[in-house]
Length: 187
Image 1: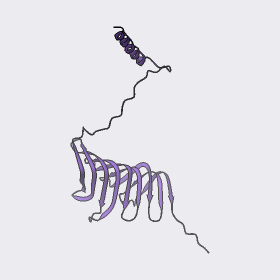
Image 2 (image 1 turned 90 degrees about the vertical axis):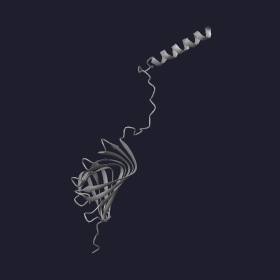
Image 3 (image 1 turned 120 degrees about the vertical axis):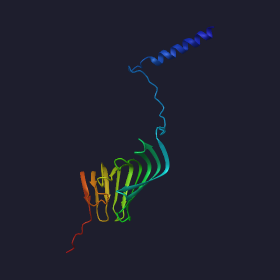
Image 4 (image 1 turned 45 degrees about the vertical axis):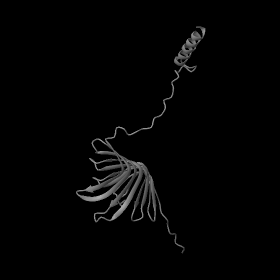
């Protein structure tokens, strides 16, 4: 009986101590254990996804992803390990975009690429950023993040840009810098 009363008293003491504020006046709260995010709300999960990007029936690109999570009746796709190959109107390979993740909205024909985004063009241009948007309807790539554009003879850096997918009509938005080799005459 005495043991039972001691156990009940010890339990009540622990409960009251847990509910009392600490010496700083704040109530102690146990930290919640972080759970892994399982995409259980996806309409469909596809491994090794392949999406053909078209414009009026003409293939403009091929989007490959390691994992595709379909939402909103298949109009919004969350992508993992993204690889997009762009084609010219004649069907020739024009460049490749890679990123760790992305979101493709088929209603808007828009890809939001995130995480180590790299575009490598066939003419030798290489663009890197942490996020980038490819808007197929406007035929434009843009970002508000930091970027580096390496061309064969010069380099551009800045915060945010707008350009066509070939990176020829390039407009830097903020903190723009360019570096290029300069030949100094000897005579």
